[in-house]
Length: 254
Image (cartoon, rainbow, N blue to C red):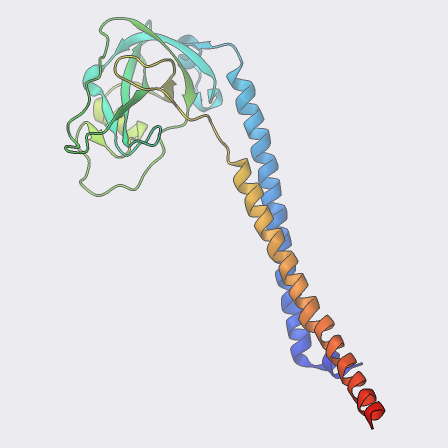
């Protein structure tokens, strides 16, 4: 056994490298498994969006509205305009603005549902000056899709007003307004109307992100393996060959 193989430093580096290679490889495998899960989820979302639209009877009778996530719905009811809320810092098409959130009292029911009606641009000169939004009076019909509650953003204490807010929690909003709100959110779809833009992003589970992370972990694993082989095996072997060749070259020159 060579001195290199007998050295404590060699074995410490070997064990450390093996541990890091195993760790980075397992992390890459984990990211691939997450990507596979997200691909299946994305396929389920796309499949649910082509199913026939649900009526409000199904929405009201379902105890767990989350089971209807991403399903298309057609709802009839009346807007509760005085409870409209504007969620700030919600961009669309690269422009800052507000999501307009209005409860809809469902026809033929005592229940209401929160609707993400559309988007308006923000006034840079005056945050509190809101673009006009037309809210029809009387019974209306809307089309939309079931969605998760609005994502929460970082919120400065005391920064929210009654109408303009950073975040909106449905249970807390139910308590605040006293409305019998369902534990559901409907994103209204369709063309521009009532001063609202509805160019919503498609549901994206982030499959590409996990593939990118997996590539990084596998790349780091390959780099660690290559560096270990070079510095612990190939480079020492090359140095030994050079040392053996040097005396022979000196003898020939003499």
